[in-house]
Length: 234
Image (cartoon, rainbow, N blue to C red; front, side, top):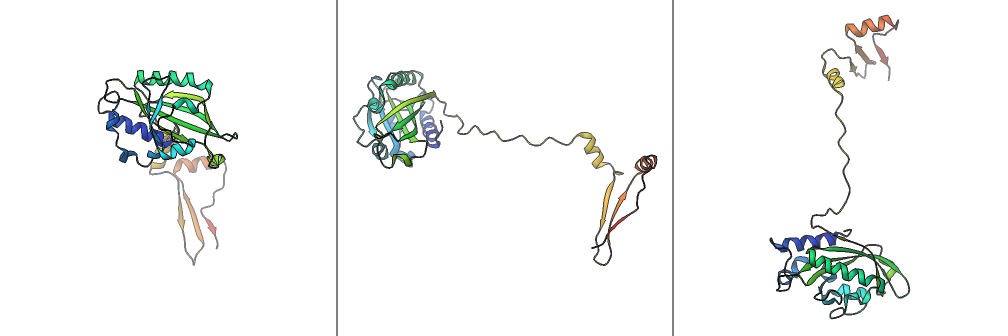
């Protein structure tokens, strides 16, 4: 699932189950999904080969350019996609698991948008699910539609989803590794070399480097001449 509202709808569907395989239609409270209600629909799939809309939100009807209630779900899908969609409906009802459908929607004059349809199975007073609560969202920039309706859709991909599927695949980078033990021991050693900075406006800034006996012996062997202090005059 790509759209945030798709995750919200599947999460709401899961909470409604209350230990059951799927929730019942009467459990759906429109107030709980009011922010996306205009794109939500109820699909009757008693005959998965001829599913039809029982209810459809106003924005969804505007997207297709007519009142969807009572019309066939497969009517605005191209012929090559209908057999695959019928199979998906049957499988979703049998598995009692939501399915996410990716498609391309096209206007009569050829403008193209990417779309995502969610179908989550529900019962209607029966033991086995025969309906779906669903939602359609445009994933890409909708401006090519320019207010024109979608004439037909073409199936691109589908996937059965879990309600706990993450919205994003982003994995935060691991924390930086700790300093090697030898560096940690050097930093904490009481005789480790250190810089002593003295700041004064009346005197030059002096930077002193105190060295232990081992460091002094090393410098002597290398014939390095070390100045006792470096003065920086402002």
